[in-house]
Length: 439
Image 1 (cartoon, helix red, strand yellow):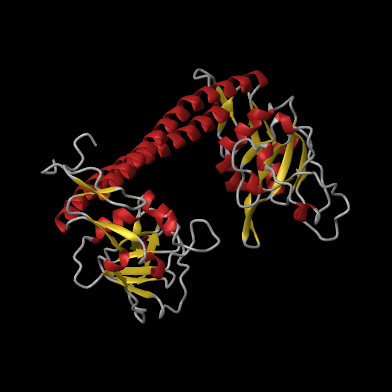
Image 2 (cartoon, rainbow, N blue to C red):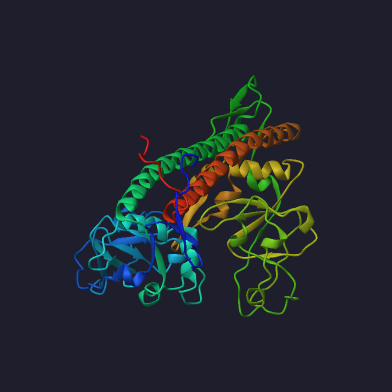
């Protein structure tokens, strides 16, 4: 923003979110700028959605199931250049519409007041800034953070900045150009992150199925998805590589006598990272009072077996803590003479897709891992010393790739902060565009 300088002259403004404005700019109540558009009975118009990330878009462009009601007679009509916001205004669900269509009656549709000339995209940028969303929170009401409805009756009492129309147009032209550049930068970084994530998966799969010695010789394998394995490797069914597999319990009102009030209840919701921690495990009295406690062995590897399979383990600090798990989970204690526990986790993660292809089946309407197939699943087994080498290799490889991912994520965060600051400075008059916008 080095080329953007303050305006030459300002006048003081006695308001909470702005203390001065450039000469010629005004601060007006929203009732003097906008009026609510309430037009219903247009059920045949295209359905629009007010999103946090992109503002007003076509519902058909959303990659999710249409959750709107069948009767759309009460839906509100939107014209091109209208502004629309939803109950999630505080989270950023607002914006300018490029389309004619209809939105949920829970939304508010705004049009310029008669005789007022404005560039609605200027206000698209303004109302989506952090300062304006925070300002609006004082006028909203409700019980859910971020989803407190902002009625038009309250919105109209708020104030907005009104630059001259030609200034609005120039700011919009500049911000549209910058916004497209920033979006393109973010897409490229997100693509890089996705590619790095795929590289991690490939490195892990290759390491746990081929090893890391490029000169190794191979032999034929009985594993149908893995034609050959290194000559020094063995292969066994999973049930012959573990000491114990413990299943979770379905809560029952008939089993309430075994709970002593302090045993953590671990569910699939706690399985969000490679290692679950004490802070992630919740003691849910209602759930535990409805189940017989089934103690999980220490050093267990926990697997989600409903709707997929994810690998996690309990850290050492929790080995002395008794836990119980629900029916979505299984706890495995590996035979350490065959597999190092950390390597076993890496192995299952690396070949997860192969396990899912062979062992996942639909039960009722939910896909689950069929345990009889899972326990008979053939696994490649490197010697213990080679397992240690592979663990070290993967840790080093992941450190490099994770560093690149972290750098890309930081660059995305920085460019988003820059965009927020740029928009805020321009729409509040803190910075002035140069006389001609450079190409």
